[in-house]
Image (cartoon, rainbow, N blue to C red; front, side):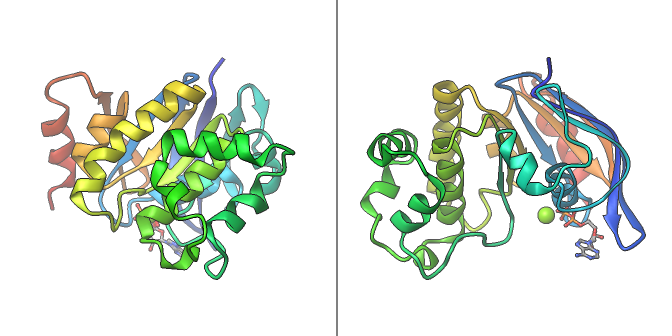
Length: 232
Ligand SMILES: Nc1ncnc2c1ncn2[C@@H]1O[C@H](COP(=O)(O)OP(=O)(O)O)[C@@H](O)[C@H]1O
Ligand SMILES: [Mg+2]
């Protein structure tokens, strides 16, 4: 059974269709990178799956559970974590307070150990105000928080945006090991091609709301095939 199944999904804003009958399926533990130029509908896809935007056509199922008409809150309860492109943390609260708000288990320390295993830098910054982390670090905190709360499917919107190249190089390994530890399925929206090809099992290019081409990252011509769509 697919961890995520999207069939003929259309969505958009106030009558303007952005996403046009998109279909995809993710096997449990699989990582798919969705690439594409600005404005092609990548964020719209994640928001529609999460239930933040209306679905004009199509269906969404999460591990076999029908999720087409669920609110974001109910989708999250099916084990879906969403790391938005825009800032989504409590900026004035500390890293620790942001984690504590989400992790309502008796053993907060055990959850922290899980966070440390994948994102050790966060443990050094527990008392730091979340708003003073870089954009990329804030997304890593959101991702760590989702993993610690047991999300089985992560929708991640441009986690590399605003990160230094040295951090991006390390992040691919971090995400792959997080997947190994938790078996998490991931739908990663990315603009950073080397990162996407290093971390994902498959890639798909979104062009004006439709998938123009897909492939496995193991195929040696992946880079050239994606670049064809990204050049203006
Ligand atoms: N809140 C909004 N209201 C109206 N149109 C929007 C809104 N957000 C995005 N769009 C439009 O939808 C299209 C796709 O946007 P988006 O999904 O954010 O693209 P991407 O993430 O690929 O850069 C763009 O044409 C954009 O202008
Ligand atoms: Mg976007």
